[in-house]
Image (cartoon, rainbow, N blue to C red):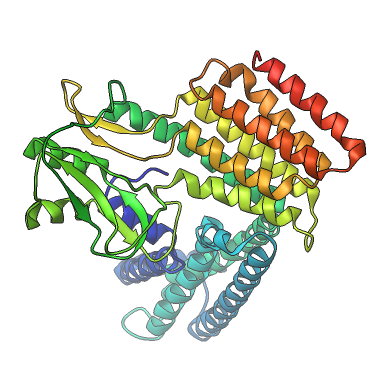
Length: 433
């Protein structure tokens, strides 16, 4: 996803947490219990009694039923939590530890925990009201607790299905690829919105100064709109040498300010506030993080310890699809400009060239010992030719194609080298070389 500032970044962190959705559902359940008890006290309970079972339930039976439901829901919450931990352990071992946050974001798991926690809260609140006050049996509330429990059990069956499905490595790679392609479309539209047309040449000969980070961590989000507003307000040009996902130390520069020989504290504070740092790298505003996940799964699959060729091939296919999407969408590096086209902020955001170089270089270094993988990678570059040969990044793909073919020919068995060379020649012809 593409996030534009601290507020939306905080929302992302809440969405990625295990506690927010269950906690919110527990609060809603408490409010719902209070409202249903109020309705029972207003006469709804007596109106429902003539309808028969389950509305004709008596006080002792209602108390026993609610006690049983409360105990059962707590037990299921423990079960769901344990299964979730098992899922995270399996995912970390088979797919990579960096995928854990994606599993924590699984909305089905969060809703499952929230349903049972909410049912428990609702049931306990209603149980505390049975036999107390003018209405000894809040029949609407008791029946609602029963319906919530039945619905939660039905949802649990779906949650188990989703849990088993999420452990399939092909499914995990497919979901990452789909998310990456969607985020590429969002990032390309955002780059067009901020304005990418025009020269990115920086001012020469004038005063300039550097703003350092004064903090340590990974760049999780950069608010380009704030930086553009700062540059416009002070009549400056900002060159930001860092990108989302970069690791910075307290002395690393986060911006070069053109138009000032020295930046005052207020200006430095404005620039630093636009750069959000965290202890770990996330996908909050980082296309490259998702691309790295696909490449990491492929690299792990090709390792001697795992030796899962077909997982690696699936990841390469999704990388290829993402690169095709980036070329088709015209993903370019963001350049923030004013209304007349004057450059305000030059960035290092992700573009087609950076994505292609990162993915193809890493895959080449880790997979050229396997002829099948090398042939698939070359073939996929050939499939990109109709889009890439007329794109400015076409030479980048050709450069990596030559490196891949050379590296593969030097590492695969002699019997496979002819096939590698033939595949590389077909790919070059597709690029018009």
